[in-house]
Length: 275
Length: 300
Image 1 (cartoon, chains in turn blue, green):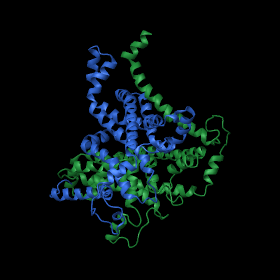
Image 2 (tube, chains in turn blue, purple):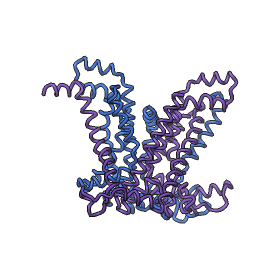
Image 3 (cartoon, helix red, strand yellow):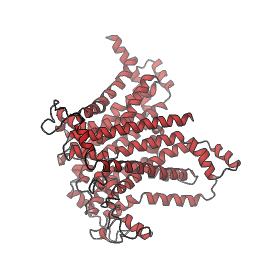
């Protein structure tokens, strides 16, 4: 199976496959650089005839992207902070022991992952409304989205903690550390990399969060970039170069972070996802 | 008092606090809303009693009303197409790519890792990209298909009621394919190489090696990947508002988007809760079937 004698040919084939798969991304950047008439050329031009970069500042200005992206940043930071604070300790305890209670807890967390956000949003909205939380819409979205991301985070961070040998921690306890000391000074530093990668992943997902924000935040100046994009997107859109420019400015930071951390993200995801 | 304190610093109290806080939070944000959803689906909810708990009891009225909607069976059909189409597409393409990237050539794992970029992108952006690629007159997919001689005319992916659900399904296959591939790669990497060598010595050809070694060894991975595919597909929401908004005439509407429309476009929260309850029952039944079938398979 591995004895194919033409690794170069395989490499070319692999690059071709990647090019086909990533074509939608290329098309986003190419379309954003096209003029308003060129986007409707038939057949479409695969390379923009006169790349026009002024669309980026123009779209940024017209769609008030600074406000939208700031709100996305606030929401993503809040969700990540809450998830890391609540998820890390729980994942650690679930990794440390094996008994029926832990199994029940793990099963409950796995089941929570199954619940679709579109199912949860109706009772959450009505409940938040009754509690008065809708007056602080971004906080409400942060709490709701953290509830969604914590189970996912726990499952994957637990896998990281599993790989930290418990002997190290026992030695620290024998040396007179409290459980807290052993956790914060021995276990956490050893699991730091895995936690960091999953925090970044949580951040990226919260940065693109849509359904809770769309349903809960009605004031435009508090909406994140995903809701801002949906405002001029639909089955009958025509402003495609503007939409693609918006999309490009929205996802380019995410893509860059992903490409830089690709190896770590992939291993962080795959280590826990199947256990 | 001191016993409690020392338990918190040195004993079980530490574990209980760590797990308890999180469980309490998750219970408040998932357990309670779930129960509340069941309650609401049996109530009459309108804008006037939204803020009170004492709402008129409606019995099964909401359920009867939902089932007798003219679009009910259409939504069920679309949900089935979307779920099974997405899972099949993601799995078949993902498995093929995973096997391809197991071959040894330079940069194999780096190139494979790049595929995962589709998975970290915001769903709404993916929807916007595909909404543009699948556009009728000016969409690039139609131009490519015409150039390859596969189609003659123009496929109106988003506005043709026979195609619209497939438009969203195609976008979702692209979105989830890389994640499927990644998980299947992990499973493939866990199969010992010498099994293949032994089979080769015995004269087994590629197909025989695939069916007698790869598939049986991958059984639990495949089960997990298909289950995760079902979970993620039923959670997929962002593509619908971005590409078709469930239209034209509900021809691409699915349960998860329909539930949201009831609550947040028609402001009939009871009906929204009812649709989500029906969907949830489907999710639970599907996961029970899945658990039972995999257990049976593992026993052999």
